[in-house]
Length: 203
Image 1 (cartoon, rainbow, N blue to C red):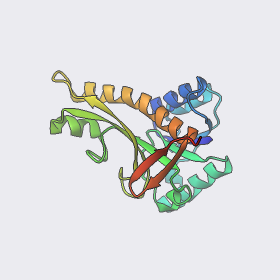
Image 2: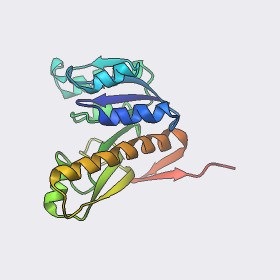
Image 3: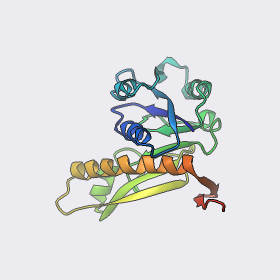
Image 4: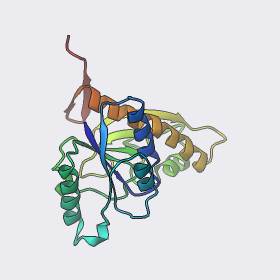
């Protein structure tokens, strides 16, 4: 399966996906890495791995819908079948999502539906939860509200700060995202309502 990875920053989750593909953990290849920022450090990671890159600044487009249409067209032109958001700091609207039904995924640093939106790790820490974590979910027009594919829990330690908790959640993300992509690309699954069900292999 051909993946398209969307980034805006350092690309650490992108690197985790690159590494997982390199050791055969998923039946996938990365067709393109696209950033809305020319200075995104993740672009260098992709180039070093021999992956094509594209910079599409959102400010170059008239509005969000125009950007979404152009972004979807760029991915489709490269045969992308699964779009993976990896620190892509743009909300995607129906003009994009409808082009890839049940084929746009994101990783979020909380156990959704708790703490959606920005700075989720600090939200969790300040709320006083005892267990935080990360979630991979399908992307819908509603923020961090799509069907949940998989999650990983991260305990909140008494000695934690918001920063140390965020660092441990990021480590969990680097395990969880490749695992989720591997499950989606390597097996059978369906979405029923809000539930993502992985089906046993026939025979």
